[in-house]
Image 1 (tube, rainbow, N blue to C red):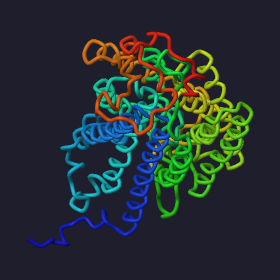
Image 2: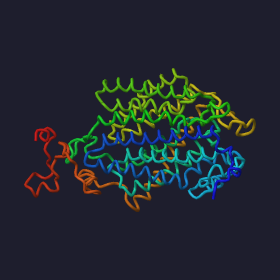
Image 3: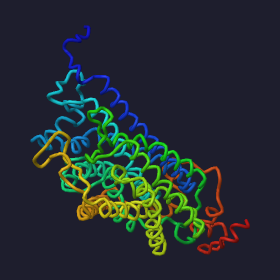
Image 4: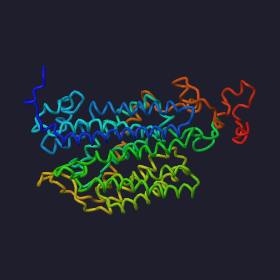
Length: 479
């Protein structure tokens, strides 16, 4: 059976639409590079005895979130545009779940009067599914080596559904909070602040890893296998995100005219330069903090803090404003990092970056870009969804922070009760020390470090050693 060209909707497959489709597809590739960069950072910092397990759990958690988003997630985000034209949330889910009509239709077979630009929306499913998986990777950074695999995987599925619902409210141009004045260009709220809210609950329940905050009878220190691997991972993230920024823009006639996903006036060049400068500013201040404190962590946290702080406003900042924010942001991460360190809280990534720098960025945006018009949808001239009818406000930025972090807290509180009563939540401390690679995969590390060479008091008595009296770290180092 040959294709009848006369029966297709040519408006859905023009050269102009193909160019936009390729642009959005490149954003998906960029997001996958971010995944690789995050896994490289994990490979450089996870304890050697649990290295494989930590990396594979992140990978499987990513694909669980990815698949769950395809099944149900996209319908939540897309619902804001259905509601804009008098549809409902259920209409969107019906069209965009894994068996939905729009998910499974060929674009050139769908009347543009029914759904224009279908290819773009279908590509966006892939794009946002990657970020659903990234949320789970970020979660794992804070529960690695402590949360049981079954508990983590269940959390991945639930987090994907809740964050998808949260994206409806906080990311786009006509979602409830966005339409009221909350501004978040890059999804800082539902991608970064939401999992940080979950960790506010999980971190104290899971406790610190043995040897991380202080010497342990069986682990004198928590030693990472290859800190140097983190720098290439960091640069891989830096390399992947520019195409993701392009995917957060809408393009209208004239064909190169860009507005952000929030419908704020912007341009490709300014948005990319803002991105570059927050990284550069963060790297400079992070470097100063690292040498001042003699803590290598700030060389990595610095540029990431600049990025997270600036991400909510890449579309509306001027480059000089982005640089200033990038220079300031690591100070917020530093304050949170030192606060948690002094209190023995084993969480050194999500709290400093997302609750520290992310919150700073949201507030900075609400103060210095207040009154900037955005929201609504291009072509709508009056009513609740009129183009750029809303303005950025400090009050709505604060509301958005509370909603995103609060959604994470509530989700984790409910989950923790269920997980404790069913599959269990925390890995036994002795299993953490012996290593999860051996526990789950029967894999042994190729190198036994000084910190891991402390005798097990459970077996030392049988070999004639003084049970429960480990050698000092200096003695281990000399052995």
